[in-house]
Structure formats: C-alpha cells, structure tokens
Amino acid sequence: MKLLSTACLLLLLASCVRITEEEGDNMANVMAYDPVYRAIDTISTVTIEGKRSTVKAGKIYAYGNYIFQNELNEGIHIIDNSNTAQPVKIAFLRIPMNTEMAMKGNYLYANNHDDLLIIDVGDPSKPSLLRKIENVFPLINQQYPPQSGRFVCPDLSKGVVVDWVLRKVPLAKCLK
Figure 1 (cartoon, rainbow, N blue to C red):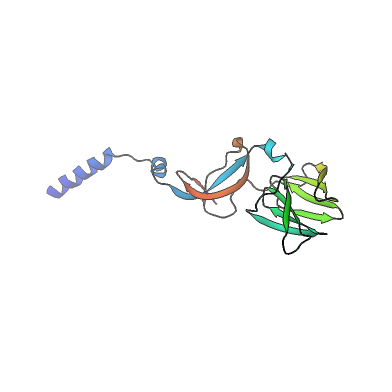
Figure 2 (figure 1 turned 90 degrees about the vertical axis):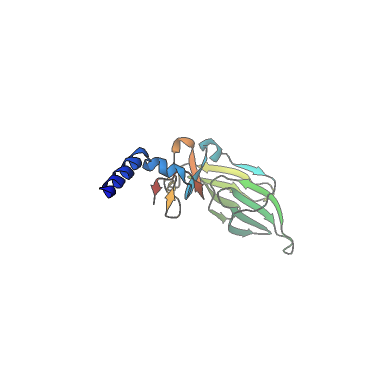
C-alpha cells in the first residue's frame, strides 16, 4: 500500500509539470546551419571598388601581367603581377554571389547569382561591364545547407539565401 501511495504521489507531481517538445527545443541551443540572407536588389548591383583583403579565396586566372582572383560570393580581385616578387592589388570588382569566372581574349565572363556578366578587361585597371544576360544559370538550391544535419528552415521573405553559417541557434527543426 505504501508503494502504491508513493507511486500515485509521484504521478500526481509529474502531471503538474508540462513541457512541450517545442518549449523543450527552445530551452537548449543546438548547433545548426543558419541561413544568411541578402535583399535581391543588393545582389544585382555590380561595382568597381578599391583594393581589399582576401577572405574566401576562389579560382584565379592569369591574364598578361595581371591576376584575377575570385572572392567567393563577393567578387573578383584584380592584381598587378608585373613584379612577381610583389604582386599589388589594384581593384576589386564587387559581384555579389560570384563563384565562377572564365576569360577569353580581353573579356572576363563571371556569374552574378543567376546572371552572366561580360566585362571588358582590355585595360585591367579600368574594367567595364559590357553586358549582363539575365537568368542564364539555374538557381542554386537555397532550401538546404551544403552539409547534412540540423538547420534553420529558410524564410525566403527575408531575401535570397547567400550562405549558411554553422552556429548555436535556439530552434532548428529542419533536418537534411
């Protein structure tokens, strides 16, 4: 009888505490991929800027005494390599969402999200955008991060997903 009374008392106490699955998830941060957004109008703007340091280096192309180095998802560095012992960055082509480039003759071909840019680099110190052909490339899958695991479900009303960052987040219900 004493055992039955104790069991009933524990059951009564346990029924007073209610934690739903969602509240439980909110109580602990978990490591998950979190989408990084950009407004669509900021992705379409291509500009020529001053030199800057390289953070996420991508492909490189040599053209005469110049080197063109991709900065993943940001643009292309133009580097004067006439003195191979001391290359000098001279400009940065800000091309949001740029991941690929190719050269033929005096022309640099680069992607800008889903568009193709043709840039005249006959004078690499003064590149000029000749043409932008829209919707050439299929959109990358913005719904999932590059690695499997937990991730924050993207909300495309916040803009275009341009990257995924692994960090602690309070709630990550999506799973790949």
